[in-house]
Structure formats: structure tokens, C-alpha cells
Image 1 (spheres, rainbow, N blue to C red):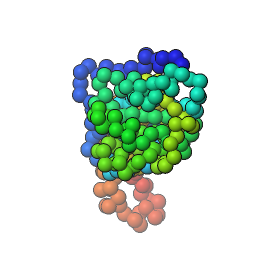
Image 2 (image 1 turned 180 degrees about the vertical axis):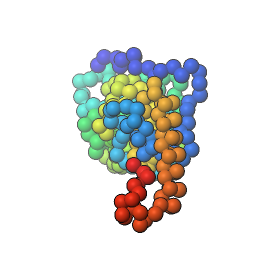
Image 3 (image 1 turned 90 degrees about the horizontal axis):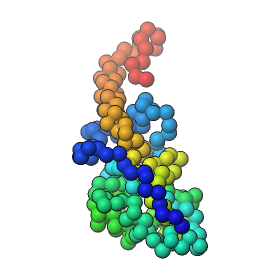
Image 4 (image 1 turned 90 degrees about the vertical axis):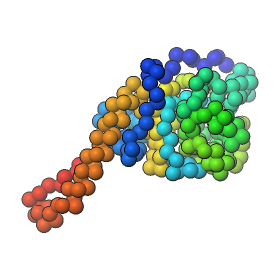
Length: 235
């Protein structure tokens, strides 16, 4: 098994701290902003979380899962731990571990024991379109964890990690290392690092515009709207 490619490093933010999502902005606002600024799909349908009140946001560190092969000696020798440390690098704090399902979204891609490494090294959380085990324990860890659902059976004979720091496909969306991932109870979205500041600013504008529409809707004239003399304010 060849070593994972090393050329998909996150863009340098010039020493600036990690950005934050503006207050009140949610997944739908970010998806709308991505639609205005980019032409590719960036949104994932809602996932399951043991703590859905805990949004997830941070730069992606990726691990690609594939159907298990007993003859992939190096990949199997590294196991999850080896691929995890390759993925998160020397500065893991605040990152989001993204695991592709490898074609088996109903198989377990990890549980609380091996995923305890995320809390140990200060990651923000995890996103995968596969299943996870021990959701109650993961919820108690303080991490923000989002997956396709809970599993009970070990999945290591079905899928296994075989590459780190490579673009992966999650829920029909491409996630590259360094992309910013946001997830809340309404869904998830992947934001390119190079346009992150623009996307966050556009999402805030969208949120403020929607709040303005609420005021206009409260004051609208129902009879004029029924007659077609006024038009709806929101799009």
C-alpha cells in the first residue's frame, strides 16, 4: 500500500486564528451563501448526532475508508491510529476528522475507544457518512459528532482506513483537507478554505436580510397581496 499523498495541505491563514461562524448563522444560511459564490454541491442531508445541540465547525482532516483488503499490508499495519496521526498532523487542535464511508454507509467506522484520540488531541469533532458505535459515550466526550446512525457490530472486516490527507467523498460531496466543515441539526455543509471569509460574510448578509423580511411580513397587507397589488417581499 503506497504512502498517502502529502500535497493536500490546508492553505496558510498567515497565523490568523481559526474563524468563527457569525452568531445566528446556521447551516441553511451557509448553504445559500455557497450557492451564490460557488457552482458545486456543498450540502449534506441531516446526519445523526448524540449531541445535536452541539454544532460542528473546523478545518477538515480526512481519512479515506475503502472495502477491506487482507493483502493491503501497510494500510492494515497502520490501522486507525496510524492513519489518524497522519491525517491530523502536528497541529490537531480544532480540526474536524472526516471519514468517508467507503461504499458501506451502514458499517461501523469507529467507536468510542479508538475515537477517544479526538478528545485527547483537542479536535473539534467528527463527520462521516458511515455509522459509529457507542454514541452515548461519544456524546459524553464533549466532541461534536455527526454520522449516518449507530451501529453495534464491528466493521473492520468490511471497511478500513487506507489513505489520509486526500480528498474524500462524503454524502455526495467532495471534502478536501483544509476545507471547513459545518454541521448542525439541520444538515452539514463543506466550505472551501480559500473562500471561507467570503462565504461567512455572505451567510451573515443572508441572515440579516431574512430577519428584515420578518419585519416586512408582519406589516404586509393581506388584501393587497390577494388582489395582486403587492408582491411578496421574500424570495
